[in-house]
Length: 373
Image (cartoon, rainbow, N blue to C red; front, side):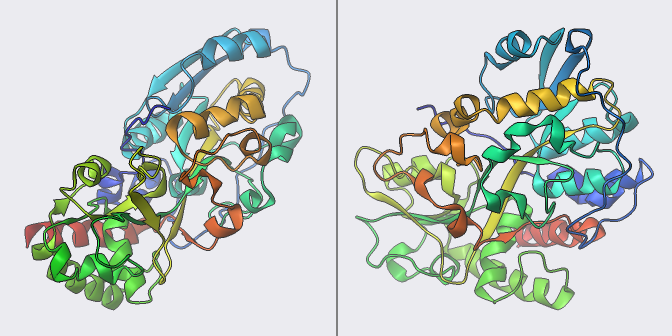
């Protein structure tokens, strides 16, 4: 099973200007706290369209779909061509998708809050469910995501949560609270890492204070900053990518981590994962169709193909992320210690991260100020 590292959820550039500014350039309005944007008018699509006359360009993170997907989809669907272009981060994708209305891109993979922002800008084609019969493979819970209830403008591809990944043989007490990494005990001094990604840097502090991960209240963000600044001298450092390796070597013994990157299946069986008692997030990566696409029928056909259990299971088996596709997960062999067995009900206990529009700049400022201390 390969374990490819992605900077899949980094919002630095786009959030630095606020997602609202990115979409405003395209004539959109602010989506602040709008967790369920109304999709713009849908095009009239032909369920019997000749797909051999349509070609697709898909933007996606490196390694996030099978290498053979273009050729297999082309053969299966009968489309003229399927081209993959890559983006390394959400902000890179947003630059592509907000420039000239996303012209030239048919299907995009972006995280849920970014799909929400694109929809608020009127850049997405509503999902035509009748053209994606494999939507029935999704868990019922995957149709109730707060940024897009009913999958009206997006189709979920992977999902997960954030917690504390730790060396069970090196900690003197198993972590149960975000406070365990914000105010680590003496035996964990300089052996803890946290993330620098803006919303995930703030998450432990916000949750430990009992606040929403989506708060835009200045006083709550200020209190979170106090905790983060106080924690900084006690950390080994900030790490969004290699924390799993640091755990394996023992350089770190507790780290803030996305569940799929916590190496709980390591052969030594000494790495565990815990969702703190104060709660955590629910992150989702999605597939969306651009309104500017001239190949909308083929775009829907591709998403339907990806939702085939034999295709969608690839993500769970190769990048170790759970997929919100029951039919696919039923085919996945879950290794001992793997977090792939986490149920949808458990995941939905996490708070969905949503687009905050102009308020995103508050988190950019928080990150900058913590880094400067």
